[in-house]
Length: 475
Image 1: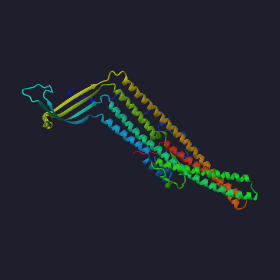
Image 2 (image 1 turned 30 degrees about the vertical axis):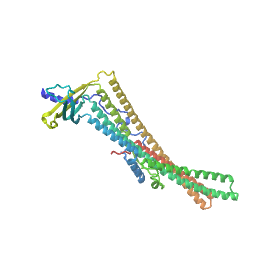
Image 3 (image 1 turned 135 degrees about the horizontal axis):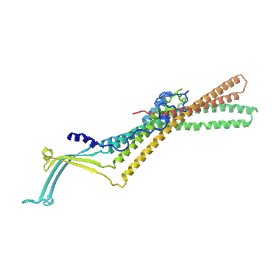
């Protein structure tokens, strides 16, 4: 019988765990099942292979890679997310420590010189006018609230889920940051190339104007044509200033994203460079892998787990709590008593408390926790559906922009060929120089269309990588 008592003591001390056990997130969409495929994926430009986390390296631009790496290391938003991780992990350690006893040491020395009779002690024989009292004690105090119904274990479970959610939020910040840096870098290179084309167009317009003015002087052209071309030239030259301003703004935005002061990258990035090229084939995997990879979905799932654990914390509060306090110490009227084993004294004080009449407060807290869990579950469903929609929309846009670029290149090639023919005919004396210049200007306009289509395709590619949940790394 004694052995049976010792056997069930640990079970009594650890108790049970009330509240619902977390069974994982609910199923939301068919895309969560293994073997599912993206509906909007263009098989000609995408593949079901596992995508690469550092997708920007596939664009083959060393400066872009440098900027993203610096941003991931120095951006304030990432630093904020990392601070929140440290806070959540510290909270988890606190909740785990709350399951263990609390032990403190204390030392006491009391020396009192009091008037006789002040302590209402009986007098024996001749007494002096003063009473001297001394007491010395050194001991340990221990207290432990037994987790009979699992409130503290549920609290630790929730704190662990919150810490994991904080880690997922950091990863989500990295995904957003890498995409934003890449978007701004592509915009910068596009603006620089547009400025080059605009200046070239202005130069051609100036040549056309000079020729037209010569013809006007000979009476071969009207004043209206000269005024019209001057107005067009003024409009083109005025368009250079906004482009220069947008370039400066984009440079400052890149400095902000990398955690640097405005102008920090001007020397490095002010020299025009081509827009980065994306891979011919883009690996996208499958929807199920994408949902497991996306940090915002993992954060939503961990928040759901934390909300579920909080229900157990509030359910446990409806039951009695049992705590044990123990005191052991050495002491007596002489200071030597604090090291005398014969003066040891101990006290064991079990305590039980139960708020059995709270007029529904505990039940209200449980209902609040259940409502929070339902809200977290709805947020999770929203995150999953939003991620699937984001991926399909990004795939559609990527495919459309790729076809648009192909069409723009074909048009550009035709315009460029026409400009070459016009120049050859001018050299042969078959057409005037103004006609050759007009053909060159049309070719520049086609170049501008290809440039814009290339930038849009790059931005669609970057948005697709973001939708796939790529660009984060575990630390």
